[in-house]
Image 1 (cartoon, rainbow, N blue to C red):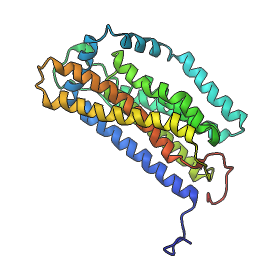
Image 2 (image 1 turned 135 degrees about the vertical axis):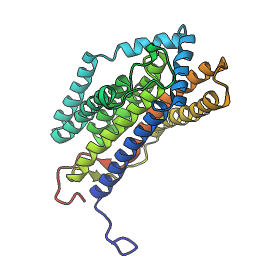
Image 3 (image 1 turned 180 degrees about the vertical axis):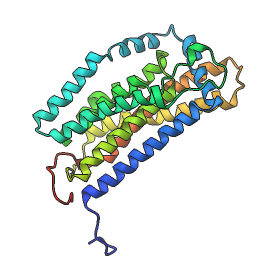
Image 4 (image 1 turned 45 degrees about the horizontal axis):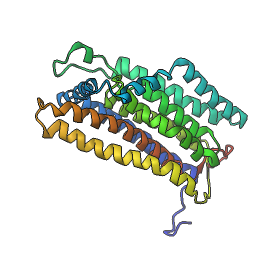
Length: 303
């Protein structure tokens, strides 16, 4: 009995509830990002300014490095990443967990393509040049990177979760920023992809909790994980979202549209927002799964 005299909900029920709430929240935020940046003239002008600022900076080494990093995200590399998830899951003899981890990648990519091609059009509200009218919401490259990261987070043993995230997280969270630096995507494309993958991962993991395949973990303090994984992600999330929001407000509202500083500020803001959003959704998933082991065989009550 809990202190107030009511039976506490089984652990699996509590985990399922917060994962389902997170999935719904991520989906609503995705719709909000699409509405604000793709379906309004102000949002379109700002993201066009981001692309204009990127063209002004395209001789920077960062832009060339971004292109090189993105060139490694191919069908072959995606297949290799999925194979790694399969090998880890099958080696652990966790077939259902393997399906969830690989499903996070597959379902996220499928939804990203369906949304981009058929569901979420990009209307021309500002008479933009034709080269800026192609629809790219949400970003496929960001979807690949984040879904592989989340799939790995789910499929590894709980005690290795921090190590797995530490190895892959900073690369994956910067893929969105790379796509902006390379001029392949707008910031909203990458943020939408982050939220899409978070929604899919939470929804599929909630199914594990519904079937009683989660258990609580009495996790001991892990200072190295906090220092080398959580702290860097928090730094990227806070700096990216904070600085990006300030630069967005300056370039979208404070300066007149014709000010030559607008593209530069918009590009800088979009760049850091993309990195900050990816780091933030990674932290959200880690928080939702804190002291939650996905290793437990099916039980009748999920307690």
